[in-house]
Image (cartoon, rainbow, N blue to C red):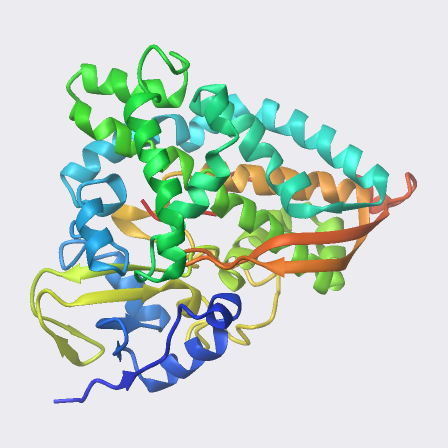
Length: 412
């Protein structure tokens, strides 16, 4: 019987949150399953094992939550992210109605108009801060309006979302510092994000309307607000920012995209593969199970390392290279199976529309300053200042044609 390799690697130090890739490579070299002694977790660092786990919800259960800290996991049991079918199926069906791919046609004109306006304004200035001025714009203007929360809540949404992600890791100082904001959000969800105080036509109101029809328990509605706040904000914002940074660092790839806009969906996938905004979630084994020839006992908590799997050299040749012709539609940044990201079509729409507009107007990006996110559940940049070379009106690439189909977030 093979021995499970053990690692004392800490994925939650500041340096590991900034750049975990050397640790991921070491874990992949150790084997398909590695015991992380610091947190009593069995990590799956390779692509095949992570994908197989995502596709097998009966064995790799989300019902005992998907984070790291046992106390936080116990508190989150039963929310959409932390449930299994049939309960999960009922909640996801309600959550996903306004987010289906066919419903994106309804919001596309509004997203395109906002993207046109903000990109034109920023490019004319010649330099801008990508996170606050570009990446946050669509989620905070269009998407927050569609959710239909009270105006006073929208100013807090980014703070609440980041705090909730900080509780994904161990009970460290980051998680402790985040708890007041998490508690503030939970109080808001229970007391303010309720019928009579929210837009009756918004997505949030639809949760309560579904409960009135008996589709979901009414007491699930406040916590289901998490699904409209956290995945619609940070993950998409990070994905947009990461894409701009990657194109700034790889101008040859930007040239390819500007010449052939049909590459935009593949560029989105490649960016998400290389820089996954949500690097991991966990599952609990419901029965004794063998992974890569290694037996694990029922009740074991298993960390699915998306950020490592998406760079697994066993699956992706030259995995650290940003190549928008790679077409990695099988990446795991959106998850797979029952918990595949419910908002992925909206995220792809937002990213794709912004890339299209930027390609019309920008010949080059130059990074002037950047600063990484330090968060227990997220990875990317919290600040990215760029200068841009505007595209001359006569540039043929400004009018390049191609399809941008509906293609940041976490699994649900």
